[in-house]
Length: 419
Image (cartoon, rainbow, N blue to C red; front, side, top):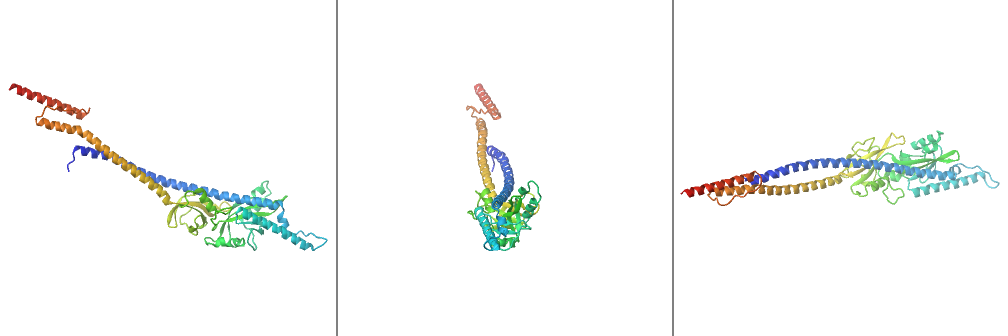
């Protein structure tokens, strides 16, 4: 099909508009895709750092519980009274029996105190230790137990024995510790630990504070919360750490976000979504700062980031705390952006095509008039003036044709007059 000049101009103008627009849209899509992915990585890494702060804040909460309990124990001198028989004699009655009854009474009072503190604070256990780390009383469980090799106890005891001015303040410590299943069992936590076997040890948040009476350190109060399989009960006084992280960071993204705590071997030991417990993450995790990586969980791809959890020595990594957001959430943002780009581009192309057609028609209309005028002149129709006033080269052509028409008409009239 032969194209006239109007169609050629319309096609040329449409291409002139659509080509740069399409290239710009493509470049914008690439830039937006990269920006959304970069923002997603940055947001998840920031959330992991916030999760780490919540983790440290929980440690501080345990520290305050241990400190207040230690102060109460010290104010009533419950350790000496509960642990050591007085040996006092009496005019009537057996001195040993009197001492044992007194000891049992104070010990019962101490047990009631730690049980009340557990119930009101929401921690999993509280233990009162002697100066060697042996358990004098505990909030739950039975059997012999000792924290003599617990890194927090060792660090606290070393601080106390340093005889420095701030020794007692530095002895109030909190941190993450790996406890053995036997110790957890002795504190009545075996059921929670064994609910889903994901780790050979129990990751616990613990805090310790010395019990100071006068100038003496009588013992220590140790509080703890087991991380493994932490129940996600919102009614607990001290909710599960993973639940707190999710509620704090993803209140509006409940269905697409999840909070984790991993063991050293990168297995999930606690999660706001219990379905992922025991899942082993395949990607490598950074040892110094949260880095966003992709992991497959429950059949979906998640963008995750984790901060390392270190032992009280601040060197050894014993776990990870982190977050994950389903990548489909970020894809929805990208898809929405792409749809908007396509709609804007499509509207621009349609408007551009209409504008190109209108402009081509306006440009070719004077040419068509000149063509009709030339045809009339060729047929000898010289009476109708040629009026094309465009102010450009086409207008000049129209003026030339008008002069030619007038000249031809005058020439013909002269020839007729001579006859």
